[in-house]
Structure formats: structure tokens, C-alpha cells
Amino acid sequence: MQSQSKRHPLSGFPEWLPPQRMIEQYVLDRLRTTFELYGFAPLETRAVEPLDQLLRKGETSNEVYVLRRLQAGNDPADDALGLHFDLTVPFARYVLENAGKLQFPFRRYQIQKAWRGERPQEGRYREFLQADIDVVDRDALPFHYEVEIPLIIGDALGSLPIPQIRIQVNNRKLCQGFYIGLGIPDPEAALRAVDKSDKISPAAVADLLVQTAGATEAQAKACLALAEISTEDTSFVDAVRALGVTDPLLDEGLDELVRIVEAAREHNPGLLVADLRIARGLDYYTGTVYETRLVGYERFGSICSGGRYDNLATSGSDRYPGVGISVGVSRMLGLLFGAGALSASRSVPTCVLVAVPDEETRTESDRVAAALRARGIPTEVSPSAAKFGKQIRYAERRGIPYVWFPGTEGSAGEVKDIRSGDQVIADAAAWTPPDDDLRVTVTGSAQTGLSG
Image (cartoon, rainbow, N blue to C red; front, side):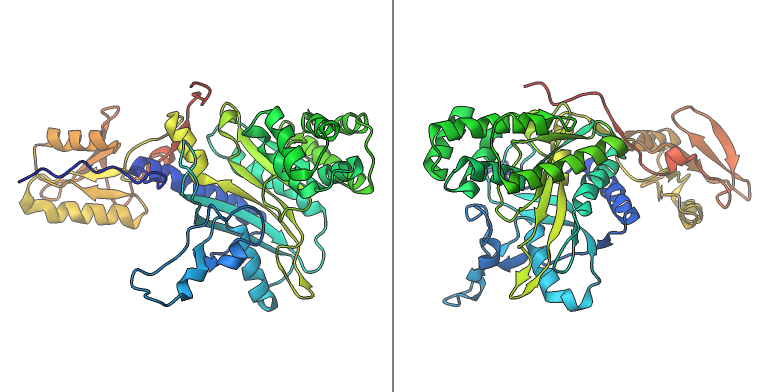
């Protein structure tokens, strides 16, 4: 009989080990708690959307997974469906379909998987988990929501044991107004070209500007000069003015970006930087755009991004402008797991292992476990009635901090902290572990992704 060939995981479809999955759940719980503190309501949308909706905004056709049934035959019905590549497009569709049942402005958070058929690499997957927040309103959305979004993300990610984040913010009105003022024939193409600045050289960006946006070499040089401006305060305004380009849309974008930078400096200094090369590649963005990087992991790109969109959720005369941002949970965790920068206090949720003196008395061990669980203490019973030393070593291998020894013939039980060796008489109806031991805790290390 031939041995079975070694199985290899599918590239781009992460499957975390249990300690990593517990870290992921911890992160999701923290994000969910913060989002709800700010009044966002939970939402989940279907996994599939009509292809025409997925492809109508931005260059995404190469990334969409198309849905087909194995036995579809000549029925083309499913060929028009694809897995969503983000949560913004399905959210916009959901708003249009349920507008009569929603209260506006509508604030929602959505934690869900998405699929994108791009080349897998470190921190970038074909199946991934996102955590989004959006605010949409009917007809008009006040600008102050664009100010609020990065402050919420600062609180949400700042509550996690991860490296410091830096949110880069720009305004597409500023960029478009600048390109219009320069006289570039296709400002949208210019935005897409500049958005590739993180991936290709300035010379290559300049070539794209000439080839796709119709820019002259002088205009391309001015676009690159704009993209080089990055400040933590409002001095970017003087830097832009010094380039000598004027346009009303440019003025509007500058004013809005000033308001965001000033608010961040007041509420969360060091959180935000005005970076005028940030454009976001999807065409549905119309105002403020955000990208977020982990300090020490900048070379991996953004782990949280989004922006303002005015025309994504429209149908006839109905219009629902919005602003939102998405945390790439799988992307962020993949980078941190790869660097060994996050760890769980134990590999299982269990806080207490109840020992089994012998199989005849397992029922008593089960009673102790039930009493502890009834009081919210994660507990399991030893899988065998081996010698107590072996049962203790079983707990040690799994990181379980306490072993409970049931009493015999009416005597009280005892609980042992196997880390310190301390052992005390205890009553399962009253004993409680310290808070730090009750649940798995997550800690971060000082390691970064700078190497390599």
C-alpha cells in the first residue's frame, strides 16, 4: 500500500491554531465592544452579490471569485453571482433594499469574511476576516462623521496589545482639484496611478500618469511633488499652496483635511498624519480617505482603510452617502503571528482541570466541574484516572493553571496552583480564581516586522 502524499494547506486561506483563534476572538470582542460604545449596530450580509454590482466601481474584475454550481448544466443563473471582495459594496446594496426599515443616520458595524482572488503573500489572503464600521445618511451626510471615523479606530485598535498605529489621511477632493488645476485630462486615472506609489517607483508612477491620465512630464512631476507632502500638523496647506496650483475643489479638500488633522491632534495626538499620496484605488471614494499602518510593519502596507463615498448607494433619485473604514483583521493578525508578536496565556480556555482519583469516583469529579462551570469558571475533567502527577503534567502541557482534587468520603476538596505549587482547601460552590486566570489573556511583545 502506497503512503498517502503529504497534504499542503491551500495558499491564501488561513486556518489558525487554537491559541491563535482565541487571540482572534479576543480582538473581535474588543472591536465589537468599542463599536457598540460608539452606537454602531451589528449587521451581516450575504456572501454573494450580483457580478454587475461587484464590478461597477473600481478595478476589481481580476479579484472576484465567481460562483458556479458543479451540476449547473446550461443554467446560467449562478454565473452572474460572485463572492463579495469587501463589505462596503454589499452594505450599500443592503441600505438601498432596506431603507424603509432603517433609521438615518444609520450606524452599523459588520464583522464578516470576504474573498479576493489576489496573489497570496504574508498578511494578504484570498479568504479573510474584516471588521467594518460605516455611517450613512439620506441625501446628505455631514462632514463631521469623516472626522469621527479615525478617532473611533484609534480607540478600537488602541485597546489591543498591538504595536502603535498611524492613520494616514488624505482627501480625494484635494487631489482631484489639484489635478484639475494642473489641467490633467483624466483626474480619476491620475488618482489610480498615484495610489500605486507604495508598490512601484516614482518614475513608474510618472510613466503611468503620462500613459493613462494624459499628463505631460511637467504635470506628472507636480503630481509626484504633491504626493511627497506628509505632515502631522496643518503645515501641509502651505506646502500645497507653494506648488502654485489653484482650484475650488482643491480648496474644499484642504479645508476638510485641516478639520480632521486638528481634531485628531486634540483628541489623540500622534494618531494621524496627513499624507497626500494616499488615494485608495476604488473609484467609489469621493472625499476623505484613510489608510492605517502598524509602526514597525510599514513595509506590509495598510491594515485598516476606508473613506467617504457619496454615490455608491444610489438608485434613481434615492441617494445615501456614507463614510466608513475596514479593519483587515486577518491581515493584521497574520503579520503579528508571523513575527511572534502576540501570545495567549494558555492554549485552551480551561482554567481548572478536575482530577479523577479513579474511574469509580469520576461522577464526583463531574459534579465538581458542573459546580465550577455554573459559576462561570471554564473547567474540564481529566481524561483518565492516571497518577496525579500525570494529570498535573497534562494540565501543564495545555497551560491550565489549576488542578482540583475532589475530596473523598465527605472531606473537602483541594485546588492546586500548579505554577506556584500552592494548594488550599476549597469549596466548588465558593472558590473563584483571580481575574487574570479566569479567562485567557492576550499579550503583545516588543518584536516588530522590521527584519527581512
